[in-house]
Image (cartoon, rainbow, N blue to C red; front, side, top):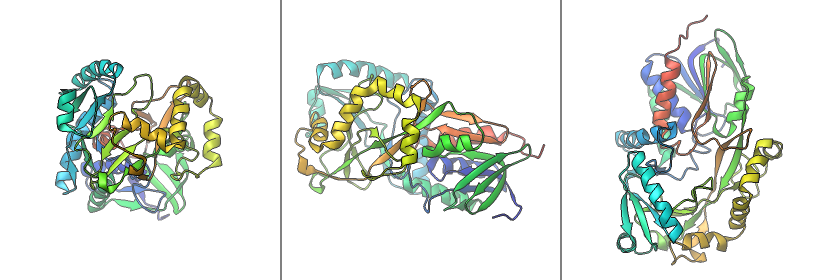
Amino acid sequence: MADGRVYDFLVIGGGIVGLSCAMQLAERHPGAAIAVVEKEAALASHQTGHNSGVIHAGVYYEPGSLKARFCAAGVDATIAFCRRHKLPFEQCGKLLVATNALELERMDGLEARCRQNGLSPIRLSAGELTDREPAITGLGALLVERTGIADYRAIALAMADEIRARGGEIHLETGVLAIHEADDAVTVETSQGPLRTRMLVVCAGLQADRLARMAGIKTDFRIVPFRGEFYKLAPARGRIIDHLIYPIPDPALPFVGVHLTRMIDGSIKIGPNAVLARAREGYGKADISLRDLGDTLRYPGFWKLAGRHWKSGITEMRNSLSRAAYLELARKYCPSLTLDDLLPYEAGIRAQVVMEDGSMQNDFMLRETKRMLHVCCAPSPAATSAIPIGAHVADRVGARDLNPA
């Protein structure tokens, strides 16, 4: 790689967000020298490839936030991209099911939030819910018809094809070792040799804090990885639902709870819980990285977060250790499920940004210098929002003067 070439744009990260950024930079700057570097042997190996596959409509998000805006735009953009590339998708809709009086009361606030975010939920009575979903029991539900499902790994690979078709390069098995910013360019030392670029975009997901520090950016946050464990329903239960089935979330808790998710391949998975991961990229239950775990346990912000949510943390750990406890959560709204219905399924890991004060960063967060832009936080629904995020990044970096100072 050390051939003296200087790229116009270099993107670190071969997940859906990084690929979207590179794709849209290639679209806007024909003839520009663009490359993506990814440390794994395949694209979409981490959060993108372990995604739930949901096209989120934007039910829960703070009105006016980047998260809400990107998600609203992302639904249409994702569907249009799937149509253009003949990729499978379906707008099957989401049902948020209230199973007790408190959840029914919370449903009022959730309905109001939906409308603030431009959605038009349909309120269903218990009978109307049963008519639509005979296997689901509740006191009522909100139907959000705009929600859908897709295959985000396939979308990411189609983005990579577009990058290559426009002359861009993708370098796999290329780990980043160091980042040096100068006035005229950024040098990225990699396992395959150095690369120079006039503008660097970093979309490192689970490694976002480390890459930012490597680049000399002061970080007031840390990635704390949370493992989301799933089960897959037995094939005999493959058509038990027609919609996505979600609980009414507790606003005091950081995650939305266990739900039933239809997958684009026709299967159904149940989950996730949310337990502290002992490795940022370890998807097996026994996987552990002493470096990753040590980074988490030495971080004061983690202990402040744990102090606020220790009760829910104990509950999530119990559900992780007990399949029966996990089943109990789903049986609240799907009482016919049994332990035999729950089959093993691969876990996912969420790159949760935790600030120094112990708060969870739940909106998109960028850090910028003269020749670098780091996407430090791209929270769920980042996959749904990947195309608007890429457009936002392309707007910010594409307007800069890339010529040497």
